[in-house]
Image (cartoon, rainbow, N blue to C red; front, side, top):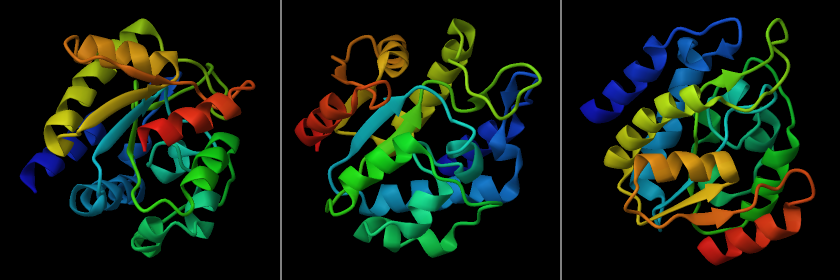
Length: 201
C-alpha cells in the first residue's frame, strides 16, 4: 500500500529535538505501527478514529501504537490484538495506566477503534526523556497535517476525541466535522471515559 508507506516515511523523516522524541526513527517501532495500521485497514469492523493528546514515555514511545503499552499488548485477550501481537517487537515491557483502562474496556470487544494523537511524537521536558508534557499549539498544527493524511488512508465512519487536545486537533483538521468528545480517563475521568467509549463503540 503505497499511501501507507508514504505516511510511515513522513513520520520516520521527522527530526526530534531536546524536547521531542520521534520513536518512528526506530525501524522496529515503525514496523509495529505498520502492522497495526494494516490490520486496522483490513479487519477493524466499524471504522472509528479516536484522537488523543500525544505518546507517553511508558506507552506509545515504546510500542509505536497510540493508547497502548508493551505490557497491555503482550497480555491482551482482545481477539483482534491476538491476531497481530506476535508480529510486534518491544525493547522493554512497561505498563501504562491509560493503556490499561483502554484495553480493559476493549478486552472482549468485537471491533476496535483506530487510535491516534494530536501530535504523533513524544513531547517531554528538556533533559527529561522519561517525562510527559502536553504538546504545544505549534506541535498540534504539525500534527493536524499528519491527521489529515491518516484520515485519507483509513476513511473512518466516525471521528471522536479523547481529551481536549484531540478535540482541538480534529476541529483544526476537519472544521466541517462535528467532533464527538470523550473525556480522557486520567485525573478522575475513568467513569466518563468508559461511558463515552460505550456510546461510540
